[in-house]
Each structure stands twice: as structure tokens, then as C-alpha cells.
Length: 308
Image (cartoon, rainbow, N blue to C red; front, side, top):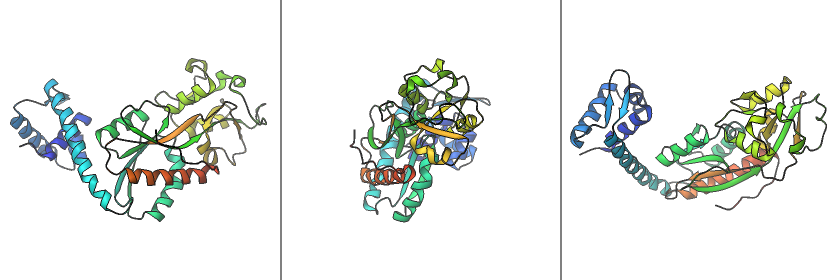
């Protein structure tokens, strides 16, 4: 009989395509993992993995088997999570994914509040881009993921908790630095620096300004702090979400932040979960704490939005 342990080993090998790295993630020796999976293949009667000294490949029938194995793992994980419903609220482990344009600005306000109100909560935070977080969420590796909408999330529930606008950030010595507001049509696209492809913030910023990517500055960065430092060095301008202003711009004498004069909100943050997730009450509690944390960060007063 195939064990759940073997299923987890196989899914880890599928993810890493490397037996040594998979063994390290599973906290066992490589020989033990290899032996366990060889025994599983023997019981199945077919080969799941092709492996040699250089690479690991998944066989066609192995791909079908792993798809079924993933469903089994997800169901078993959800059975274990049923126990959380009988624990104190937010009183167990919670794996939360966050996109890079949210985590650094949200966590400093969120973590102390969670520690004070829910001391038994063990929060595991995974930071990655939206598509990777959605894959982990659907695979059951995450309990929930914080994404910026609009973003395609078919088959998942979205609990919206925040909406915000973008600010145009430029050097304090620039001619437009003293303006109260700036319209998208008044921006110079050739000076506008944005994040690299793969970051949803880039697409949201382009949509807010009604711009095409090829019209913007050729300089890009992988993080908002880097973009802002480039602005301080007079290499161009950028767009920053409201939640990041206090950390990145406020108190910086070389920077000015001007509201973008385009009807908003320019992006909306939401907790995404699987429809059959068994501890939705914990997601609702987290949603409340997230809104409160962002109100402290931005000084704004936003009400909770309804589930979509």
C-alpha cells in the first residue's frame, strides 16, 4: 500500500526535480528517499520518475499519478486542519503567502498585533510573485495568500480587505515636485521606472496610467526600495502604493510624493483561499487584523469590503 509519506516525497521530487534537494526539504537522507520512491514505483507497477546523474524527469503516467497524489495530499491536509476549528482562534500554524510589494510594508504593523492578540499563532510567511503563490495555494502548501487585484484567480475565494491608490514619486528638485496632484497624461512615460515583468504592481501601475510597457523608462528594478533609491538619484520617477509611502518616502528630503489624479482604487488587496478550506473563520479574523494594520500604516480609515 502506498503511504502518505511516499506521496509527499514524490510531490517534493516533482517540485524540485532533484533528489538531493527533495531529501533536504523532507529532512531525510537521499538514499532513504530514493529507496522509498523505488518501493512506491514497484507497488504501482510503473515508473514515476526517470533519473540519471544529471536530471530527473516525470514520466507521462507519472504525471497522471502525481496529479491524483496532489488531490489526496490536499484532502488529507484539510482533514488535519479540521482540528484547528476546535483550537483557540488563530491558535495554530498558519501559512500565509504575500507578494513582495505588500509584505515589507504590512508585516511591521501586523506581526506585533497578531502576537499580542493571538500568542499561540505560528505564522509562516512565504514571499513570492502572484503566480507562484497561487500555485502553492492550490497545492495546499499555503493556507491563504495575499494578492493585489485585479489578478486572475479562478476557482479561489477572495476576501478583500484593503484598497488604495498610487502616488507619483519624483525627486524633490523636479519642476513638478510641488504639485498637489498629477494626472496620468501629465507624466513623462520616458522617465517612469517600474518593476520588472512578473510583478503585478507593474501591470496595475500601467493600467492606472493608461500606458503601454514599451513607452516607459528602460530602467527597471526588482523591488520598490530600489526604485525609490533610483528616483533619489535622479534617474527617473516611479509609482508607489499608498501603504509604502511611510517607509519609502516620508521624511526623505530628496523625494516628493504626489497623488495620481486618476479615479481609484488603483489596486485592491485580498486574502485568497480554496473554496473548501476548513478554517475560514481564521481567515476572517486575519482579514480584520490586516485592515487594522494597514490603517495604522497609512493613517487611513477604510471599512472592510465584502467577499467576492
